[in-house]
Length: 309
Image (cartoon, rainbow, N blue to C red; front, top):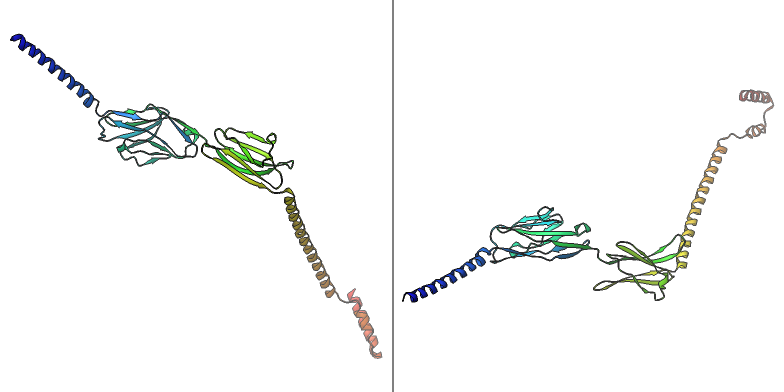
């Protein structure tokens, strides 16, 4: 009987131990682990110069609840000791220069937005959510690239008088230029110049010809065209402008000469009008005089002559 009871007791004791053990696991999993944060983020993000960019970062809570205050922190280069580029608590609607909050804490999203990305933004970023259980990501690498683009096409004349059609492109690396018009472009005559982020392609220009250059992007093809006007027409236009200029210069010069001659004539006329006539005396002597007054007249003339001397 005792053995039976003991056996039953022993069995009851084993059953109780099992229940206690299960309760212990339950406590560890649902109580001790409850509230822990798990971060979710990509290892690599690509950005383009001059464009806006969002570095994604989110988190999850085991009990699916987020209570109390929470603080968001973003570092660059190194966590904890690196420069803090953005930080906010609860209300994260503010922006700090080119950095702004692009997530929602209640939705467990703490993504960061960078406006007008530049080459200096290249590096490693760390996101962090701070609450009762603080947690930090391992690092998100941001690579900044230069988008490929077809910038312009134009006609240029060298110092030797040669005319070339040039197409400029930009990118990292610069895209290849394809000349689709005219069909007679000789590949051996194409002049290519390459730089770090820019390059150009030039072909000899023929009169009255349409030129088209093209680049191939990932989702589309981009092309630019230009028409090279006949050089003879340009020369005629230049000659016409020179002819008009010469006529204007001659007309102005002739006007100045005529004005000068007119001034000379007016001056001479004024001098001749103000000078006394040398023939006045002769005219005066030709008048008939009375015999008895002639002596008096001659004496008066002599007196005037001496006085004038």
